[in-house]
Image 1 (cartoon, rainbow over the protein chains, first blue to last red):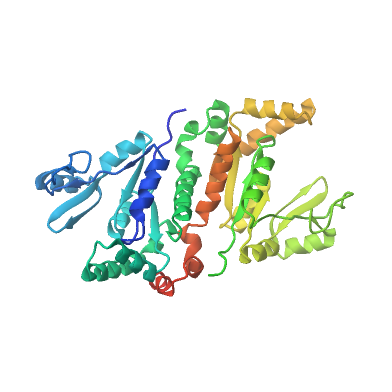
Image 2 (image 1 turned 180 degrees about the vertical axis):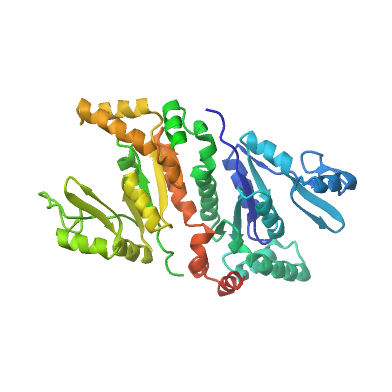
Length: 213
Length: 213
């Protein structure tokens, strides 16, 4: 029957919403799902491996990839370039792997523009008060950083309606169950299946009946 | 927070695909889901109750409802009229109930036309051979009826691509899990939520941030 084409799943959420935990839970649940590995011009830090943490390339290579339109999304952060390679993602999807991208709203909307079949999911905190409480509880940020994160959170939440799905992370298990369902359901959508009915059902007669319709 | 608006779920499948079992499983799983009760001009049979099995009305009433555009779908079968009332379904959806419709492809496509927000799911048998085997095993139909059912199945399968989702019922639990996921996922779709963000998240500040975007 062959493998159905994979899904490109893009998840965004304000810092402190629980996105990292939810992404790890998804990778555990779907053995066929992989985290996307970004390209970057930044130098590897001790312990980082090329092809596992990032693809480390020089600026010239990165800029050539931009010119050739190979980035689904890219951005410059503190003088370093970061991007998601289209050809690399497409290859994985063709092999039937689901690819998970954990990126900010700006990157996510670039992906949607360049690859409309992507599934965009925005994770909301139950409230801004609760988000602030979670950020403080984490204890990793100083007051100024927390204020900055909350300001960025407000901006990002303003983009939620541009996503395909919104999931509120109030109770972790409920939010995870919804994410899991979104991925399972997307695989049953007719507009994704129509090109590859033969991967859905083995019976040639059924495939022919659907195809010729 | 109030209740989110309900979903209108339309399920079609060739006879023998396991649709009735799957629908009962869904009604068990989602306590907020109700089976749609049709209107009919046919006389009640012994044991049938008005408002539980059908709404029994006379032909004049039914024809007035047709004229007033109150049917999401209707059909004449062996001289009797059957139909799904739009006002009745809309009232239930507004109350936050999910409504399940188990109808044939012709009715389903009428519903989609009259109510594009409906979620149409087509259930496929794994093969026509398996469908025939299941129909024979049931032992309720004579040879002619089985042949007729298989002929209709072929016609109906040819309409599968017009549905929003396709689920193959090979292993019952897998098919059920997919149906369950489709319903959970649909409730997270942004285009369904955008009009009622305040029902998704209690925090007024988040609601305002999303609304004004």
